[in-house]
Image (cartoon, rainbow, N blue to C red):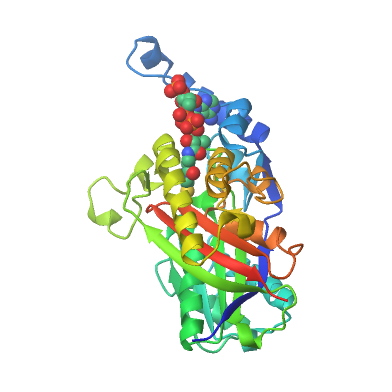
Length: 375
Ligand code: COA
């Protein structure tokens, strides 16, 4: 068995941002339009008006202050409320491949590697813009990588599950170096017309390069000590869009269930203990106690959730440095969130320091990756 190390990470961040103030103004304009359109029904008690959103609620309930998106014009247009992402020809690079290549280039540069040293590409994301061919294979070809590529989806846990899949292949010897990309265009499957969730998501792409540990000169690399994945079926976060849609009467309509929907309170209550238990058990089974851990890079969905998980794992309130959040600037970027935190807040750790990258989300799914700074 070979050792495995994370040698580089990269982030593609879209230029466009939406503040909570902009988001709430556009949603409220939309709600007022809808309410004006059904004023008679509302007056007669036959319909409920759409409630308005508020900045105060968003910050208090989630900790999110702004989000990056691929296109804000369509999202903020009260007559549209979803992004404008023009169709590309089949001979053009797809959007998910394009942002993956940007993040991958940064990860390779940080690792001091070139694409010809990579054996495989995994595109791990919570949604893929087409059924096939795999986005990963398109990225592989664009970067000139020999070997293979495949797509996988475990919702918000896609990146950590991708790391486990890649690490297992490198350990076993079927690949020597694997690039994982997490292009998350969440604005395409977010319901911007629902105040309960319109503030939750943002767009981004992350990339992670994994290599055989013996090929690596310590530098800023992190050895992967252990990975652990966990799933438990739940309908509390769900999206019913899929390839059987047109075979079912009424499914081609503009239906709420064909986009992200959730029971946010239940998710919060059920996922916090599941994740804390996973992390504590994973550390214990590797002979580590919470006191041995210098940093937690958690999934970035909700500040309150992260505060609670950090508290349960460390047995006390984590400092901002120990458990960095990026969700105030990025919102929930699905599988990319914990990787953004890791990429931005890991260089300062001393050689020998332990940390845990942990994701959680739909499925339910949770992934824990224990790493140790090399050097
Ligand atoms: N503006 C103003 N009020 C709002 C609002 C908005 N945008 N959205 C909801 N509200 C209202 C609700 O209607 C509700 O009103 P009521 O008490 O009159 O019924 C009240 O605020 C509380 O709503 P609730 O949904 O219970 O809030 P919450 O405190 O649970 O926060 C989440 C909502 C989604 C932020 C929170 O549940 C969460 O983050 N859960 C985990 C979700 C998660 O991580 N999902 C993973 C996705 S991958």
